[in-house]
Amino acid sequence: MISIYQWENGGLKETLEFAPSCWINLVEPTTTELERVLTFSQVPRDFLTDPLDSEERPRFDYDDDSSMLIIHVPCPLEDDEVVPYRTVPLGIILFGRSVITVCSARTPVTTAFLDQIRRVCPPSDQYRFAFRLLWHGGVLFLRYLQDVHQRTLALEEELHRSISNEVLLKLLTIEKTFVYFTTSLKADTIALARANTARQLALSEDDRDQLEDAMVEYQQALETATIHANILNGTLDTFASLINNNLNNVMKYLTVVTIFLAVPTLITSAYGMNIKLPFVDGGGDPKVFWLLSAIAACSTGLIAFVLYLLSKRRRF
Image (tube, rainbow, N blue to C red; front, top):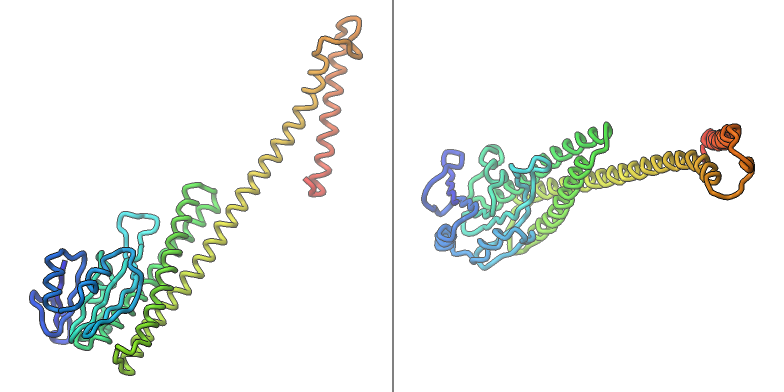
């Protein structure tokens, strides 16, 4: 899909035709749309096709009359209830007095940018326009990170009530999301720093301030994602230790039960053998049964008393 915007009456208005100064927004473009934009802009073809690769890394590139910056931006996923966010490459291409944005998915970084009235400027002021678009992407990163963190806290509350495999798997998915966010933000900060020092961009002091504002947002998002990822990693390790401790307690109690059952079983098994044994030679006296039962009971009671003393001293 292709959308073309021109600056009219202090705002961006959508039009159908290209203009010397405009913003061209490409979202999942078709081959025909790409060819149309290439014919108008005369930028290198890879400037338009590289951002459509979901594995493309953030970077800064330039040509004789145009430059390109690829960054990763957050994108909601409507079909995922656990972590409805991912990151996708967004290409920002500057040529002439116009700006082109290319993305393989619809992202609020461009769709909601139109609502940021106080942050939008004419596309002819292309550097400031691009850097304000980048600033909006950093703000969305922070907003989505806060939302993911709130989901994490809710899942932790469920684990405090009852440890569930399903909840643990959800937390593991969230941990992966933090890893993806952190990796993308690290690459974004490197690409922005590269653009800030690029001699090919004739940036004014005001433009450089706008770029530095965007860099601050991405750096803050990176630090926030790193902190949340470390906290979640520690939480998962803690719950793993709790699960192991609970398993050890269960095995301990099962061992105690086994010991209690083993003593009378040992005695009765011994006197069930067809050999000569004490107390049973010469006939079946009923008193022998009660004597053996008393011996088993006394042995079991002695073992229970020893285990009780050990538990009081916290050695068991």
